[in-house]
Image (cartoon, rainbow, N blue to C red; front, side, top):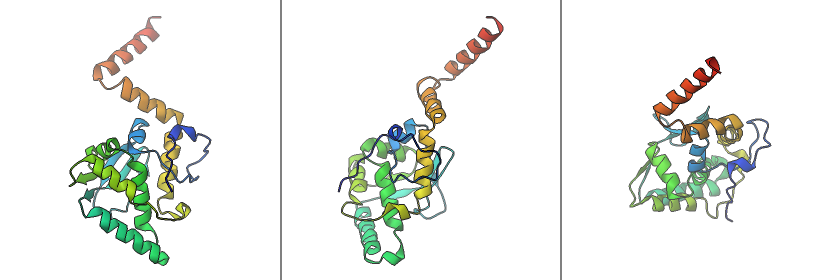
Length: 190
């Protein structure tokens, strides 16, 4: 069963961050919406958080052994449901964040992914295969609040505008200075 990732702007009727939709935009779309990624240190790799536009994910090292290890941990959780589904939900989150090599690059540049494979395409395929043929109910995920808060943040018109302005107009300090000057000058000398 293949997952369909809708663009974050199609789901705008959410009123609070307590609503869980079960999906999240990929890392590239999140970055365009103004979300920043930062590595989280001194914690379990399962400890993911989101607060005020900052997603913190522990650094994850990827090698040729990563897929079999994670698939075995997910299979263990499938066989023994009373243990919880922590690895499954983590894999689902990473699958949501990583769709293409561009997403891998975003997370790699943020220091979240350390890659021991030959290229970013392999890493994208790895995350996209992790939850293949795995059945679980997302409503019980320990990451529900992260999903909800991220979607709520991305749905905010103010956050989208702020990200758009930063990305397209305020990359250069001279641009910021000139906009500020003309705004003040225009106010004092109509």
